[in-house]
Length: 100
Image (cartoon, rainbow, N blue to C red; front, top):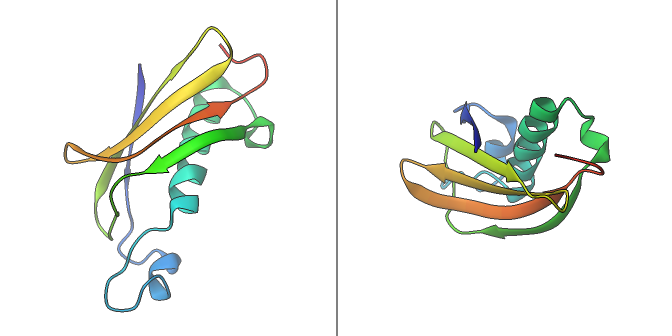
């Protein structure tokens, strides 16, 4: 299992409008970060990646430390999970052609 951490910047630009009074990191940003970690670990381009599925389980706020973990399957798909302080944030499956 591969892992990476990301400290969500308190001043990340998405928090300005998502949502006023209760900032929440949009899921698309979480997916983008997961893709970046996986692609970098495999020495691949992020443009090769497709999202097979994703499930968002818990909101993420400014200043949280997220742990991204992933594991490649023999089929070429890559299962990922995102957590914060032991709390499940998101899970899903990515696909990179010929990934292993």
